[in-house]
Length: 294
Image (cartoon, rainbow, N blue to C red; front, side, top):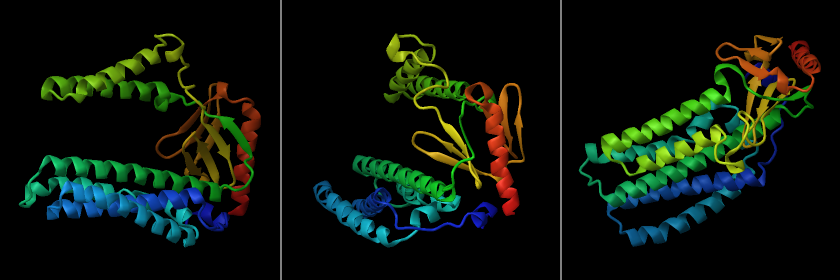
């Protein structure tokens, strides 16, 4: 068990209604995916599958909802382990792998087989991502239940800044669209190019108020909270936990607040922090409580 978990006594309660519903729906989709794959391999007609699958999702989702309610601490136990979170993606990966069955088994890769497999893979993949995010957020909430010693707005700097990442995504999107159109003649290519150019115009502020926005200030800016257990990077839809064990040093320069880590440092633009000195003091207080607890 990690040291931050030893310092923070976790009390597991009954999963909240949102996680119960989400996890139950995920289990229902997985069960329906298994039924769909088995039906395809057995040669069941499309009409029969369309009649069976919705009821399968509903019945298994209700059962999963009820069982999840009795599993105290399930989201926290999933959220605190990277391997358990990755295990949520095992079903969609397995469904995607069935596309290779015609290569090794006497199975015809019909259009129905490909389309239904892709749909099942997509739906279970989205549901797995939702369970992953919900579990991780609930684990972070459980381990950082204390009042934060400091809270500040995070505006990234350096190689991980939004501009570089966003620009790289644009290059990949536009380049991939052009290549897929020219080399393979895929119909999706022009849409990728159009999508990329729309965001390129948005990035340069061309196109009026609808496309005008500040770089690195899109939507609600993320915040960072300093707790006894570590840092919480809170975004609009997800949170990331950085334990103090992963932070080697904290520095406040003329331009940045830097958390030195083994691989990628966490860098915050000093201009986005209301009171950098007071924030640094709060961070040291949080780390001090951790050192005393050790």
